[in-house]
Amino acid sequence: MNRLPPLQHSLTALFQRAAQSLTTSLNHDAFRFYNGTIRNFLNFLGAQYPQVQSLKQLRRDPHILAWFAFLRSHRPPLATITYTPHLVHLRCMLEEQAWTEDLPALAHLILRQDTPRRDHYLPRPLTADQDRLIHQELLRRDDRNSNAFLLLRHTGMRIGECADLSFDCLRLVGPQEWAIHVPLGKLKTERMVPVDSFVARLVERLRLLRSQDPSPADGFLLARPTGRNALLHRLRAVWREIVAAVGITTRIVPHQLRHTFGTEMLRAGVSLPAVMKLLGHLKPDMTLHYVEVTLLDLQREFHMARSQPRHLVPTSRLPSSLTSPQANLASLLDSLHVAQHVVEMFRRTLPQGPERRLLGRIANRLSKIAAETRKLRQE
Image (cartoon, rainbow, N blue to C red; front, side, top):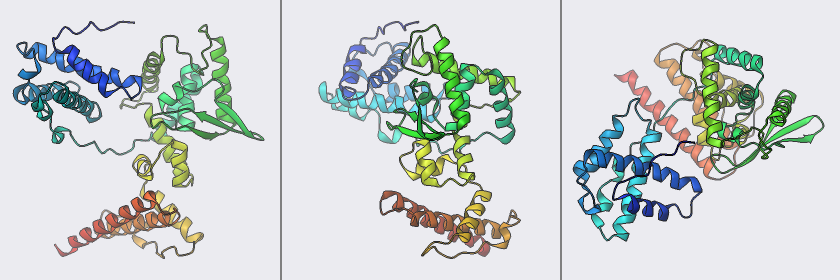
């Protein structure tokens, strides 16, 4: 395994000491992330401003602002989720050294407004054709990696959670009823995901392949002879091969299997709280952003609610414009009204708490959007 050469900059020890102090109570990966920022910043500083050899010489302009420009000039461009941690890590280390080195000016080199807003993105489930082609190719290959991707597709796990599955992750919870124990993942939560006989056979196949692997048993379902990161790197490389093999030219990532599972569950009639549990989300807004909800989904939920009315459910009617939606103001307003109605119905099924208050705010926002949209009639 190749190791990066040690940093030669005179400020290396000071920044690493600050990073150690900041990550003492965090997990062991935290220091590695901070160290990546240190390496990025000091390599830039050494190449562009070699005369800077002490903290007292650091200035917002030109040193910090030039580093921002350097990060933004990366090709391909860095995603906000990659760019932002560098800024936050360096700001925290500078604030730490402002106190420990008695240099208060360091705390003002990076301002909080320098941190960009998080990207808002739409979920990207696979299209029906993409899902079919990839599914067929995974079944045809029937090896360790293809079965792992089938497991992602039919359980909604993250790829890191799949890599951490234990050898005995499949649990019998009833007569011909199974569930997979998903270990601590991205949000430090664990869960049991119900699965059918197809997924149970997938796990048994992976167990067989693991038992045939020459690597010594380590308790994991997927062998990782050179470590977890190497396993994830290999899985992503194989995924790119599979996508290319079926003739898909658009960029598709393994995480879209999770989007596809979540959207499929919602469209099959699984309630939003249940989808939250299946995906391992902690708050409803995470699932609302995650699952693709189309107008057809809203219509299905609306008809279901009307056929099975609940006490105190607000009455509503399905506007005729939704049976054949058009690109006009009437259809837009009717769609907003249906969306507000579905959100309110779900809100009333929840107990008092932050989730119910959040959905109340969402319903209010939909009302305001509808009110602003009506003004278009007057213009």
